[in-house]
Image 1 (cartoon, rainbow, N blue to C red):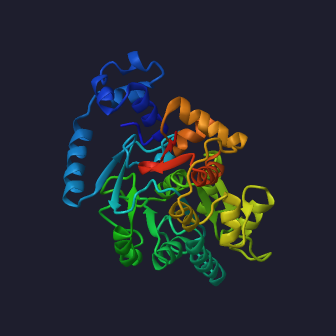
Image 2 (cartoon, rainbow, N blue to C red; image 1 turned 90 degrees about the horizontal axis):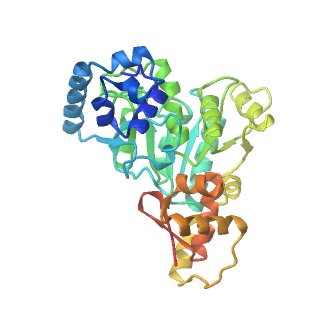
Image 3 (cartoon, rainbow, N blue to C red; image 1 turned 45 degrees about the vertical axis):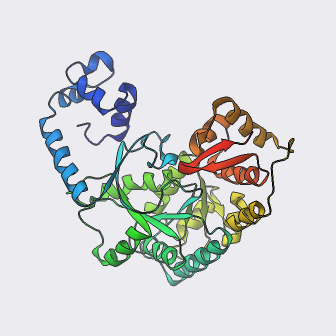
Length: 361
């Protein structure tokens, strides 16, 4: 009804407080939203066809046990919530929680070389040893995407593919077997209703979901232009951490990575150790060992200024999800995740379900 203008749809949804409110004001929308265009106001008057389509979609997702995720729902990817073009609704077929403590995406060219495949294999294998509790996201496309998903599965990670079409189909069909594995060890996520074709523009739009639901974006291989570079730009706009693997000078599918690093658009990494160090993340096993040893909170722990800012926000407001805490404390999410880990080690905060953090008093 908004002509697939995601920001306009989100503005209406938030300004009026939900879809029901937009419907209730279908005949006087310009009175409550004065800057609403004449065309949109006209579109919002007749809901007969959209509601019939919605009923059809409800039948489809019920039959196939697909979960609708509404903006604001507990299961909705919370990192996405504050993005200015977040989808109002997404459709999810899978088993993995989308609000795990750590979520990263690996992206890049559809023409992944042997060099790129080796990078992905070593990176994910080593990452599993350092940070075994993590969700890996990509786009299920040829090349870097499918290699990332398969290596995640091979190393025991849950992995989610963000699709550019409805869940009644799968593109490319060649990845169907991997997608079936992902449904039980991760999931398939899309903002598109069934019967939506995998048009080129949809792939560009889905990149914002890949970037927005992740703590960090990792570009493995990319030509001088490509979808991976679009995703890195979106991630930077969302204030997320961006990394890239360098490649040989003159190699066509390393040009994009090398240029991004040269222009300070991404942090150079060569290994999982590099990545974990830059993010300030430590092994979940270390945290478990600390808890097993019974480390308790000091009555007066030595807190850095950033840690004190987190404590002050949680004390004043109460439990907060990661993205909200990032905004209130004025600390980038990538830095904040490492900070919260250290605060857990000190017994100052506790991670709770849904990506929420609780101040221990």
